[in-house]
Length: 337
Image 1 (cartoon, one colour):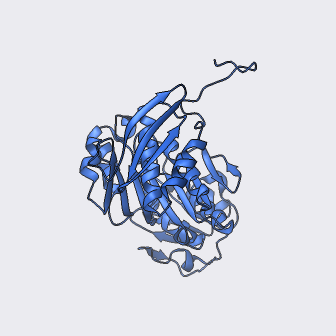
Image 2 (spheres, helix red, strand yellow):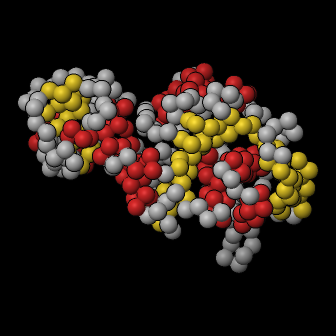
Image 3 (cartoon, rainbow, N blue to C red):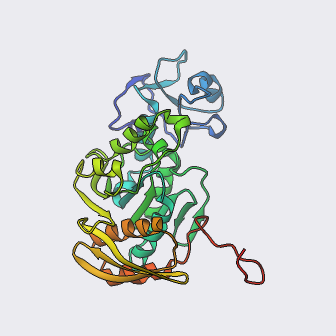
Protein backbone atom coordinates (compact mmCIF):
# COMPACT_ATOMS: atom_id res chain seq x y z
CA UNK A 1 0.00 0.00 0.00
CA UNK A 2 1.36 3.44 -0.91
CA UNK A 3 2.24 5.89 1.84
CA UNK A 4 -0.39 8.44 0.78
CA UNK A 5 -3.10 5.83 1.33
CA UNK A 6 -1.71 4.89 4.73
CA UNK A 7 -1.59 8.47 6.05
CA UNK A 8 -5.09 9.32 4.78
CA UNK A 9 -6.87 11.40 7.44
CA UNK A 10 -3.70 11.93 9.46
CA UNK A 11 -2.77 15.46 10.53
CA UNK A 12 0.86 15.64 9.52
CA UNK A 13 3.66 17.42 7.71
CA UNK A 14 5.27 15.37 4.95
CA UNK A 15 8.99 16.05 4.41
CA UNK A 16 9.95 14.59 1.06
CA UNK A 17 8.20 13.92 -2.22
CA UNK A 18 8.38 10.14 -2.45
CA UNK A 19 5.29 7.93 -2.30
CA UNK A 20 6.86 4.55 -1.54
CA UNK A 21 5.04 1.24 -1.46
CA UNK A 22 4.87 0.15 2.19
CA UNK A 23 4.86 -3.58 2.90
CA UNK A 24 5.18 -3.59 6.70
CA UNK A 25 4.42 -1.40 9.72
CA UNK A 26 6.76 -1.40 12.70
CA UNK A 27 7.37 0.38 16.00
CA UNK A 28 10.06 -2.09 17.10
CA UNK A 29 13.50 -2.02 15.51
CA UNK A 30 13.66 -5.83 15.64
CA UNK A 31 10.68 -6.16 13.26
CA UNK A 32 11.82 -3.69 10.58
CA UNK A 33 12.12 -5.24 7.12
CA UNK A 34 12.61 -3.92 3.61
CA UNK A 35 9.64 -1.68 2.81
CA UNK A 36 8.73 -0.83 6.42
CA UNK A 37 7.06 2.31 7.72
CA UNK A 38 8.61 2.92 11.14
CA UNK A 39 6.92 4.78 14.03
CA UNK A 40 9.21 6.52 16.52
CA UNK A 41 7.53 5.96 19.88
CA UNK A 42 8.59 7.49 23.18
CA UNK A 43 8.53 4.90 25.94
CA UNK A 44 9.38 4.95 29.63
CA UNK A 45 12.90 3.66 28.93
CA UNK A 46 13.61 4.22 25.22
CA UNK A 47 12.84 6.80 22.54
CA UNK A 48 12.37 5.39 19.05
CA UNK A 49 13.63 8.66 17.54
CA UNK A 50 17.13 7.68 18.66
CA UNK A 51 17.15 4.61 16.41
CA UNK A 52 16.16 6.13 13.09
CA UNK A 53 19.53 5.40 11.47
CA UNK A 54 19.28 1.72 12.34
CA UNK A 55 15.80 1.32 10.84
CA UNK A 56 16.92 3.11 7.67
CA UNK A 57 19.77 0.63 7.37
CA UNK A 58 17.33 -2.24 7.91
CA UNK A 59 15.12 -1.16 5.01
CA UNK A 60 12.58 1.38 6.28
CA UNK A 61 11.16 3.47 3.42
CA UNK A 62 9.60 6.18 5.61
CA UNK A 63 9.55 7.28 9.24
CA UNK A 64 6.72 8.69 11.35
CA UNK A 65 8.27 11.10 13.84
CA UNK A 66 7.40 13.90 16.25
CA UNK A 67 10.37 16.01 15.14
CA UNK A 68 12.42 16.51 11.98
CA UNK A 69 15.26 14.03 11.79
CA UNK A 70 18.65 14.39 10.12
CA UNK A 71 17.90 12.19 7.11
CA UNK A 72 16.79 12.55 3.52
CA UNK A 73 14.38 9.62 3.93
CA UNK A 74 10.68 10.46 3.71
CA UNK A 75 9.44 11.75 7.08
CA UNK A 76 5.86 12.06 8.33
CA UNK A 77 5.96 14.60 11.16
CA UNK A 78 3.04 14.40 13.60
CA UNK A 79 2.15 15.76 17.05
CA UNK A 80 1.77 12.26 18.50
CA UNK A 81 3.28 9.12 16.95
CA UNK A 82 1.05 6.80 19.00
CA UNK A 83 -2.10 8.37 17.57
CA UNK A 84 -0.51 8.32 14.12
CA UNK A 85 0.26 4.62 14.48
CA UNK A 86 -3.38 3.84 15.26
CA UNK A 87 -4.60 5.85 12.26
CA UNK A 88 -2.04 4.33 9.88
CA UNK A 89 -2.56 0.77 11.08
CA UNK A 90 -6.31 1.10 10.57
CA UNK A 91 -5.76 2.37 7.01
CA UNK A 92 -3.07 -0.24 6.23
CA UNK A 93 -5.46 -3.05 7.17
CA UNK A 94 -8.24 -1.50 5.08
CA UNK A 95 -10.39 -0.28 7.97
CA UNK A 96 -11.82 -3.75 8.57
CA UNK A 97 -12.53 -2.82 12.20
CA UNK A 98 -15.32 -0.56 10.90
CA UNK A 99 -17.00 -3.54 9.20
CA UNK A 100 -17.70 -5.43 12.45
CA UNK A 101 -19.58 -4.64 15.65
CA UNK A 102 -17.13 -3.75 18.43
CA UNK A 103 -17.84 -4.18 22.14
CA UNK A 104 -15.39 -2.80 24.72
CA UNK A 105 -15.07 -3.94 28.32
CA UNK A 106 -13.48 -1.38 30.64
CA UNK A 107 -12.85 -1.69 34.37
CA UNK A 108 -10.32 -2.76 36.97
CA UNK A 109 -11.71 -6.28 37.49
CA UNK A 110 -14.00 -8.65 35.62
CA UNK A 111 -13.02 -7.82 32.04
CA UNK A 112 -11.79 -11.31 31.10
CA UNK A 113 -14.69 -13.15 32.74
CA UNK A 114 -17.24 -10.83 31.20
CA UNK A 115 -15.72 -11.29 27.75
CA UNK A 116 -15.93 -15.11 28.03
CA UNK A 117 -19.53 -14.99 29.23
CA UNK A 118 -20.61 -12.52 26.56
CA UNK A 119 -18.91 -14.45 23.78
CA UNK A 120 -20.71 -17.63 24.85
CA UNK A 121 -24.08 -15.88 24.86
CA UNK A 122 -23.55 -14.34 21.43
CA UNK A 123 -22.26 -17.60 19.96
CA UNK A 124 -25.39 -19.33 21.29
CA UNK A 125 -27.43 -16.69 19.51
CA UNK A 126 -25.71 -17.59 16.23
CA UNK A 127 -23.42 -14.54 16.14
CA UNK A 128 -19.84 -15.36 15.12
CA UNK A 129 -17.90 -13.60 17.88
CA UNK A 130 -14.22 -13.00 18.56
CA UNK A 131 -12.59 -12.15 21.89
CA UNK A 132 -9.48 -10.03 22.45
CA UNK A 133 -8.08 -9.94 25.97
CA UNK A 134 -5.73 -11.05 28.71
CA UNK A 135 -5.92 -14.74 27.81
CA UNK A 136 -5.25 -14.06 24.13
CA UNK A 137 -7.32 -13.76 20.97
CA UNK A 138 -10.04 -16.29 20.13
CA UNK A 139 -12.11 -16.68 16.97
CA UNK A 140 -13.30 -19.53 14.76
CA UNK A 141 -11.75 -22.11 17.11
CA UNK A 142 -8.37 -20.40 16.81
CA UNK A 143 -6.28 -19.16 19.73
CA UNK A 144 -3.59 -16.55 19.15
CA UNK A 145 -1.37 -15.82 22.15
CA UNK A 146 -0.83 -12.18 23.05
CA UNK A 147 1.22 -10.75 25.91
CA UNK A 148 -0.92 -7.61 26.34
CA UNK A 149 -4.56 -7.23 27.41
CA UNK A 150 -5.11 -4.87 24.49
CA UNK A 151 -2.63 -5.48 21.64
CA UNK A 152 -0.69 -2.60 20.10
CA UNK A 153 -2.46 -1.05 17.08
CA UNK A 154 -0.39 -2.73 14.36
CA UNK A 155 -1.15 -6.22 15.67
CA UNK A 156 -4.70 -5.26 16.67
CA UNK A 157 -5.68 -4.13 13.18
CA UNK A 158 -3.94 -7.12 11.62
CA UNK A 159 -6.14 -9.30 13.84
CA UNK A 160 -9.24 -7.34 12.83
CA UNK A 161 -8.46 -8.11 9.20
CA UNK A 162 -8.06 -11.83 9.96
CA UNK A 163 -11.35 -11.82 11.89
CA UNK A 164 -13.23 -10.06 9.10
CA UNK A 165 -11.84 -12.49 6.53
CA UNK A 166 -13.11 -15.32 8.76
CA UNK A 167 -16.65 -13.91 8.81
CA UNK A 168 -16.54 -12.63 12.40
CA UNK A 169 -19.51 -10.33 13.02
CA UNK A 170 -18.79 -9.08 16.55
CA UNK A 171 -15.56 -8.47 18.47
CA UNK A 172 -15.58 -8.36 22.28
CA UNK A 173 -12.46 -6.55 23.53
CA UNK A 174 -10.92 -5.96 26.89
CA UNK A 175 -9.78 -2.33 26.78
CA UNK A 176 -7.20 -1.60 29.47
CA UNK A 177 -6.52 1.80 30.97
CA UNK A 178 -3.00 1.59 29.53
CA UNK A 179 -4.49 1.07 26.06
CA UNK A 180 -6.67 4.16 26.45
CA UNK A 181 -3.81 6.30 27.78
CA UNK A 182 -1.46 5.14 25.01
CA UNK A 183 -4.04 5.73 22.22
CA UNK A 184 -4.10 2.07 21.18
CA UNK A 185 -7.83 2.24 20.42
CA UNK A 186 -7.73 5.68 18.82
CA UNK A 187 -9.92 5.71 15.71
CA UNK A 188 -12.09 2.79 16.86
CA UNK A 189 -15.77 3.33 17.56
CA UNK A 190 -17.46 0.88 19.89
CA UNK A 191 -21.14 0.05 19.48
CA UNK A 192 -21.26 -0.83 23.19
CA UNK A 193 -18.83 -0.25 26.06
CA UNK A 194 -19.25 -2.05 29.39
CA UNK A 195 -17.98 -0.51 32.62
CA UNK A 196 -17.43 -3.24 35.24
CA UNK A 197 -15.97 -1.52 38.33
CA UNK A 198 -13.11 0.60 39.65
CA UNK A 199 -10.54 -0.10 42.35
CA UNK A 200 -6.85 0.49 43.01
CA UNK A 201 -4.41 -0.77 40.37
CA UNK A 202 -1.62 0.33 38.01
CA UNK A 203 -0.44 3.23 40.18
CA UNK A 204 3.09 2.58 38.95
CA UNK A 205 1.89 3.97 35.61
CA UNK A 206 -0.89 6.40 36.54
CA UNK A 207 0.62 7.53 39.90
CA UNK A 208 -2.72 8.61 41.42
CA UNK A 209 -6.19 7.09 41.69
CA UNK A 210 -7.59 10.35 40.32
CA UNK A 211 -5.58 10.05 37.11
CA UNK A 212 -6.42 6.35 36.78
CA UNK A 213 -10.14 7.12 37.17
CA UNK A 214 -9.93 10.03 34.73
CA UNK A 215 -8.52 7.78 32.00
CA UNK A 216 -11.25 5.14 32.40
CA UNK A 217 -14.03 7.69 32.67
CA UNK A 218 -12.71 9.68 29.70
CA UNK A 219 -13.16 6.69 27.40
CA UNK A 220 -16.94 6.97 27.76
CA UNK A 221 -17.41 9.77 25.26
CA UNK A 222 -18.90 10.13 21.79
CA UNK A 223 -15.45 9.83 20.19
CA UNK A 224 -15.23 6.18 21.25
CA UNK A 225 -18.61 4.91 22.45
CA UNK A 226 -22.16 4.79 21.06
CA UNK A 227 -23.84 3.12 24.06
CA UNK A 228 -22.66 2.23 27.57
CA UNK A 229 -23.65 -0.58 29.95
CA UNK A 230 -22.62 0.69 33.36
CA UNK A 231 -22.32 -0.81 36.85
CA UNK A 232 -24.05 1.92 38.84
CA UNK A 233 -23.41 0.11 42.12
CA UNK A 234 -19.86 1.37 41.63
CA UNK A 235 -19.07 4.97 42.60
CA UNK A 236 -17.14 5.76 39.42
CA UNK A 237 -19.86 4.01 37.44
CA UNK A 238 -22.41 6.46 38.82
CA UNK A 239 -20.41 9.36 37.38
CA UNK A 240 -19.85 7.59 34.03
CA UNK A 241 -23.55 6.83 33.62
CA UNK A 242 -25.07 9.31 31.19
CA UNK A 243 -21.82 10.54 29.61
CA UNK A 244 -23.09 8.69 26.52
CA UNK A 245 -26.48 6.93 26.10
CA UNK A 246 -26.38 4.47 29.00
CA UNK A 247 -28.13 1.57 30.69
CA UNK A 248 -27.54 0.74 34.34
CA UNK A 249 -26.93 -2.70 35.85
CA UNK A 250 -26.50 -3.76 39.46
CA UNK A 251 -28.21 -5.45 42.36
CA UNK A 252 -30.59 -2.52 42.85
CA UNK A 253 -34.09 -3.18 41.50
CA UNK A 254 -34.16 0.40 40.20
CA UNK A 255 -31.48 -0.51 37.64
CA UNK A 256 -32.38 -1.26 34.02
CA UNK A 257 -30.96 -4.75 34.56
CA UNK A 258 -30.62 -6.43 37.95
CA UNK A 259 -30.33 -9.75 39.76
CA UNK A 260 -32.40 -10.82 42.76
CA UNK A 261 -33.56 -13.92 44.66
CA UNK A 262 -30.20 -15.67 44.67
CA UNK A 263 -30.10 -19.22 46.01
CA UNK A 264 -26.95 -21.31 46.23
CA UNK A 265 -27.11 -25.10 46.36
CA UNK A 266 -23.83 -26.95 46.08
CA UNK A 267 -21.84 -25.57 43.14
CA UNK A 268 -24.88 -24.01 41.47
CA UNK A 269 -26.36 -20.58 42.09
CA UNK A 270 -29.93 -20.01 40.89
CA UNK A 271 -31.11 -16.44 40.51
CA UNK A 272 -33.74 -14.27 38.90
CA UNK A 273 -32.50 -11.74 36.38
CA UNK A 274 -34.51 -8.79 35.12
CA UNK A 275 -33.37 -7.47 31.75
CA UNK A 276 -35.18 -4.29 30.75
CA UNK A 277 -38.37 -5.50 32.41
CA UNK A 278 -38.14 -9.09 31.13
CA UNK A 279 -37.56 -11.58 33.95
CA UNK A 280 -35.81 -14.92 33.53
CA UNK A 281 -34.60 -17.55 36.00
CA UNK A 282 -31.01 -18.61 35.34
CA UNK A 283 -28.31 -20.77 36.87
CA UNK A 284 -24.54 -20.57 37.00
CA UNK A 285 -21.62 -22.64 38.25
CA UNK A 286 -19.47 -19.50 38.50
CA UNK A 287 -18.94 -18.74 42.18
CA UNK A 288 -19.06 -15.42 43.98
CA UNK A 289 -21.00 -12.17 43.91
CA UNK A 290 -18.42 -10.65 41.58
CA UNK A 291 -19.31 -13.23 38.96
CA UNK A 292 -22.99 -12.32 39.23
CA UNK A 293 -21.95 -8.79 38.27
CA UNK A 294 -19.97 -10.18 35.33
CA UNK A 295 -22.95 -12.31 34.28
CA UNK A 296 -25.27 -9.35 34.57
CA UNK A 297 -23.10 -7.00 32.51
CA UNK A 298 -22.77 -9.60 29.74
CA UNK A 299 -26.48 -10.44 29.84
CA UNK A 300 -27.53 -6.78 29.77
CA UNK A 301 -25.30 -6.18 26.74
CA UNK A 302 -26.61 -9.25 24.92
CA UNK A 303 -30.21 -8.26 25.68
CA UNK A 304 -29.56 -4.76 24.40
CA UNK A 305 -28.29 -6.33 21.16
CA UNK A 306 -31.54 -8.30 20.78
CA UNK A 307 -30.60 -11.72 22.18
CA UNK A 308 -33.72 -13.35 23.76
CA UNK A 309 -33.69 -13.93 27.52
CA UNK A 310 -34.11 -17.71 27.19
CA UNK A 311 -31.02 -17.90 24.95
CA UNK A 312 -29.06 -15.87 27.50
CA UNK A 313 -30.15 -18.14 30.38
CA UNK A 314 -29.21 -21.30 28.47
CA UNK A 315 -25.79 -19.90 27.58
CA UNK A 316 -25.09 -18.98 31.22
CA UNK A 317 -25.60 -22.59 32.30
CA UNK A 318 -22.93 -23.71 29.82
CA UNK A 319 -20.13 -21.55 31.27
CA UNK A 320 -18.60 -23.78 33.91
CA UNK A 321 -15.37 -21.86 34.51
CA UNK A 322 -13.22 -19.02 33.16
CA UNK A 323 -9.65 -19.98 32.25
CA UNK A 324 -7.36 -18.72 35.00
CA UNK A 325 -10.15 -17.06 36.97
CA UNK A 326 -11.28 -18.59 40.29
CA UNK A 327 -10.80 -21.97 38.62
CA UNK A 328 -10.94 -25.22 40.62
CA UNK A 329 -7.86 -27.37 40.09
CA UNK A 330 -8.27 -31.15 40.03
CA UNK A 331 -5.88 -33.99 40.80
CA UNK A 332 -5.43 -36.82 38.33
CA UNK A 333 -7.79 -38.95 40.46
CA UNK A 334 -10.52 -36.34 40.03
CA UNK A 335 -10.34 -34.91 43.55
CA UNK A 336 -10.27 -31.14 44.07
CA UNK A 337 -6.93 -29.64 45.08
